[in-house]
Amino acid sequence: MRFLRQAALATLLASALPATIAVAQPAVREAPPPDGEFSSTELVESGHRFFGSVSRGLALTVEEAMRRWGAPDAYILGQEGAGAVVAGLRFGEGTLHTKRVGSRPIFWQGPSIGFDFGGDGARTMMLIYNLNRTGGLFRRFVGMDGSAYLVGGFGMTALVAGDTVVVPIRSGLGARLGVNVGYLKFTEQATWNPF
Image 1 (cartoon, rainbow, N blue to C red):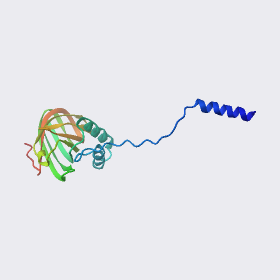
Image 2 (cartoon, one colour):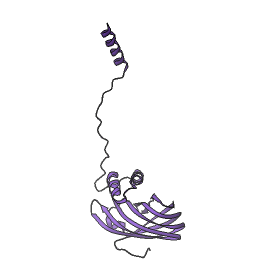
Image 3 (cartoon, helix red, strand yellow):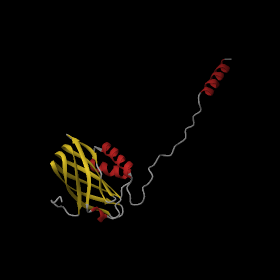
Image 4 (cartoon, rainbow, N blue to C red):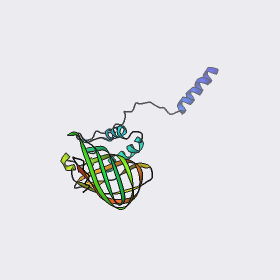
């Protein structure tokens, strides 16, 4: 009798619980970008090696850039310094990475003007979109930039020349406050002439 009560109770409990079947789900993978473009995974991994411990902010910033503009054709890793008292200057150097041509050194410089005060030094990753040929990068890219920080953090802007877009992602240290309009000019050799 006791056995029958236990069996009835077990049957009742089993029928009351929903049946669950564990099915292995395939891992969600990022769709590979078209040939010649970089995936967000490639960019974040490269940025982790370059930026170091500030990688969470980098990952969020790269994801936002890719949400807006898609997968880039090329990217630059480098460092730069900038300062401004109404008018400002920015100088940088780094390495341009492309899948089609490989890597090469690159330099940039440019003036700015606006309500802008302070100075900063930054490690920079620039995502480059619609770059049909490497030589198309050696011109002026115009944009607007805004900064408000005392110690540092990540910032992202967009600079445009024709249909090519350059998106600098900066992790800087310094004190900067303001909004400015300016341009960056990319060159194959270092120069002190920002114009």
